[in-house]
Length: 111
Image (cartoon, rainbow, N blue to C red):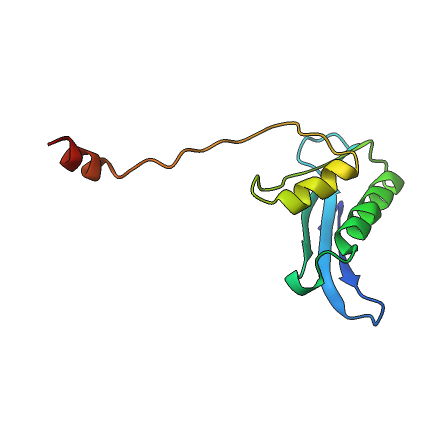
C-alpha cells in the first residue's frame, strides 16, 4: 500500500478497539490525503477513540505533506458527522437517492 498507512486503535491495555486507514487520495495531488476507513468497534464507541483516530490521521497526513484531508461518511451516521463537524471538516458533496417501487407493482396498482 504505497502512500497508505493503517494504524490499530488500542485501549490503555493495548487491546484493539478499531483501526484507521489513510493515505493519498486518487486525485494525483500529493498534498491531498484521504481517510479511507476509520472503525471503532461498537462496544468502544463514545470513549474518544474516534476523535483520537482523526487527530492521528491529521498529524500523520501533515507530516507526509498533506494540505487537505478528506473522508466520506454515511448520511445516517449522525454521531460520526457530529465528530467530523466538531473537528472542522466541511461538507463538500452530498449524494442523494430515492428508493423506487418495483415497476411491475406500479403497473398492477394502475389497473
